Amino acid sequence: MIRRKAISGQPTEFVNGNEAFDYGVLESSVAEFLEFLKVQVHRIRRQAPISIVHIGKGLIVAKHYLSRGMFLKWVEGEVGIPARTAQAYMHVAQWAAHKNATVARDERPTRDGHFTA
Image (tube, rainbow, N blue to C red; front, side):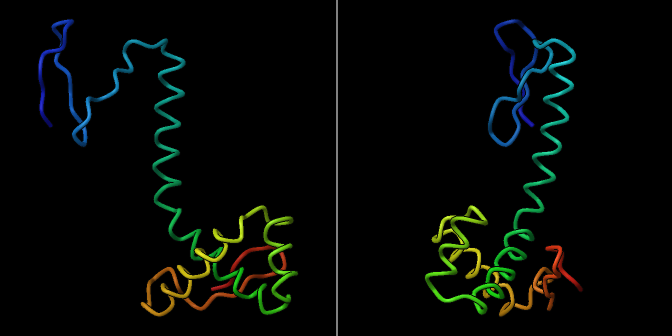
């Protein structure tokens, strides 16, 4: 972490090459909310790759039950995922399965949308 003097005379911290955000200039309730949100975003971002694999695996299973036209209509209309995004998720799931990734365990979706181990 590199420090330098800011215009106010207080040291400024740098995180990942960027000047650290100064929560001290905010009302305490806003600062607390933003700190909480930051933690939540970091947690969700760490889970995103696993979620993409799970979604892709579920879409692969769904695709077997529907014709191409029906699958695209279902994915875009019911699930709310653009066709290209769905294709990308399915490719990631296939890649993970071939790489024997930890997140690519052989799981099947249940009726309630969860995956069994």
